[in-house]
Structure formats: C-alpha cells, structure tokens
Length: 295
Image 1 (cartoon, helix red, strand yellow):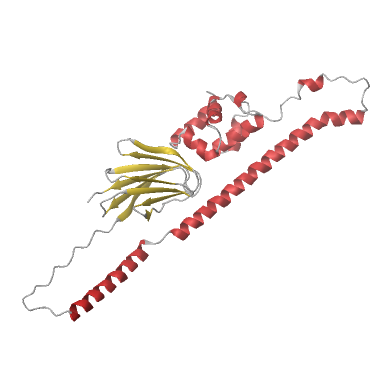
Image 2 (cartoon, helix red, strand yellow):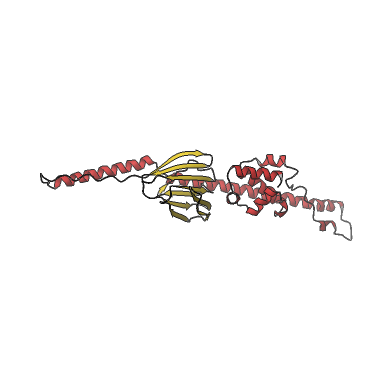
C-alpha cells in the first residue's frame, strides 16, 4: 500500500465510510477506489482519470486534494510526463519537412493534451454544478413537505374541541332518566412521539414512543444506498434504491434499529407515516438510530 493510499484509507475509516458507501458517493467503481488505496494506478483508464479519482476520493473524506498532490507529488501520476506514442518517433518520411511545419508537428501532441485536460476540467466542473443544484432542489422539497409538530397539535386541539361540542349538543337533545348514570369517558389513545435525543458526528439518535407499532418507510427521491440493522447487528436490508422507489418494513418486534443513509438529501424516512426531520440535511452519509419505547 502506498503512503497516499494509506492516508486516504485512514481518513475513510475514521469517518466510518465503507468502500461501498464511497462508491455510492463518488460514483467511482469500487475496484478503482481499491486501486488508489493500494497505489496501483496502472489499472486506471489513464493518468488523467487517476488524478481525477484521487481528487474525488479526497473530497469525499474531507481532505484537501491540492495539499495531497503537493505532499505526494512523487507518487501521484502526472499528466505532463506522458510520452508521445513511440510509433510517432519511428515514422520516416522521404523528404524533410520545413522547419515551421516540423515545429507544428512537434507541438500538436501538446496542444491535444492541453485540450483534453480542458475538456476533463470543464466536464468535472459541470458535474459539480449539477450536483449542487440537485442538492439545493432536494433541500427545498424537504423544507416544503415538513410541518411543525406545533401545527399538528393545533389541528388536533381544534378537532377535539369540535368533537366535544358535538357530543354536548347530542346529550342536551336526548333526555336522560334520573337514575341513569353517565357513561365514563373513553380513554384517549396515546399519541405517537418521535423525539430527537442526541447527535454525535454522523450518528443521530431518535426515540419513538406512544405507539404500538413501528413501521419504517424509505423513500428514494434520488438514487440512494440504504442499510438497516437492529441493535444486535442483524441486517435487514442493504442495497441501492433507485430514484422514485420505496422500501417499507415493519420493525414492531424490534427495540432499536439503525438506518445508514448514503444520500441524505435524496432520501426521506417515514415512521408510521410521520416524516423524520434530519438534524443535518447536508451531511452524508449518516447513521440514524431509532430507539422504540414499546407501550
């Protein structure tokens, strides 16, 4: 393993990111990510791609790519040292080209190289801009669909007052005998409560109470990777969910589950139909732990 690969792998493990998670985040094939950690750049499509993959890897684990390129410049493939194909040097002509044409032929590969670098840089910049726009759109959609708990409480209170007034009117209209006892009031059903408890880095803990069921619905607003385990480490689900699809499970028999979300802005979680509000909508991936306090 190279020193650069070891530095990147250590940063990835410190942030509890697996190679599968990193593949989902960077859209780089897992075998290329492993090749970077091992310092095996010969397996890459080319030196340009090797440098681009290293830069994306570093940004995904919160390292400065420019600092890494400077520190490990003797190890990172350089695009300025690629040799002109050997076959060009063996081409023989019957007549010697003019000096001006000869210089142009010598500079032609360099111009092509510079043009290729510019195309790659522009393509990468456009990709980053589109990703930022998609993240902003997903965040706006999440903000629009969220409703404060206080608004729900106001609606419930108004409904309860209307029901009480209706029951009072019906009671006044129907005569009741002196010896009849008024029926005891019905017990109110417990109201589900989903409470934020704590956050530690990429790990967030919530507590679910006031309900006799625990149904989780994972909604993929964009392509995302999701893994679900219980408190004992048993895996229920762990794969990529295409955009627009939903994964639903009943965890009423569990006391705790942890949901690892690879693309937080593109993923909604609903608990018994209630949308879970992320404490941080931009940090990704995140581990969402839900402790179920059974009735």
